[in-house]
Length: 371
Image: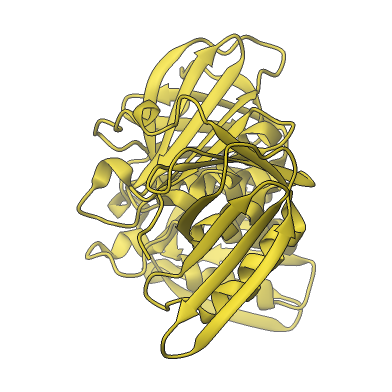
């Protein structure tokens, strides 16, 4: 195999799969990247850990077609360090990969491609155009509350459902908080209704990286138990979690007798300050809500006390005292854009509902604490 490829294009393709190639797998092949140089002037660059697969291609001047696998991390480190604009790649005896760029030369030890796992193919998959920017925002506003408790696999991902009429919904929960987003995401074609699936946390993170790179022009579909996301010259395959997501609708408060609107920025900064003295174990902050004002406080017997008062709007229903894990609330406020947020409360031991004051697409539920 022999070809010449643009260094920056090659480095970008290899950077894309760094989160996929496995470092600790018992299968040595999973730490490798698959390179296939074809007669069509394209270089295939693919990597997998059997749960997530990136399969892409870039332009190359191919003089001798062929295929090889080589350590993905080492190859990436080498390519991005090279001094020139183009890289000459040639496969020699014993699967040695020779890389030349200006006056620099590397030789890496490769492995035959027939030892690499069989990769899925998007050929024949019914792909539907979707607005990648809308999908990206849904991910940003749900991924932070995915559970990391491996004993509860049905919570180790984001629930993804096609609602029909071009709307998509994503939901995540770790049992202490819940995030739900719903967006119009159609891009020129109707998105058919489909039952929900669970995209694993790692797959969601890799999908976000893809969307960061390609923007709005993406399509998606399903292949067996895989979500397929396609962009020009690139496909991402994510093995879905085979489990039932809990009935999240039971967690969302149906109504609320106490609602307050508060400026998001000052609320976030106040939480950061007050939580400095909160318990390092629980991160609990006490919130007192009165007509026209909110008082945040923390009391740590080992460190001291903190208190701050903020103005609020629209609150009625009498004084209420409730406590939340400050980190959970800060996570919510930190990913929102609106100037004001709405806090809906019922009782001291009932869940609190957070959302942007003038945007009903997203809601966040946080369970209260006992202090």
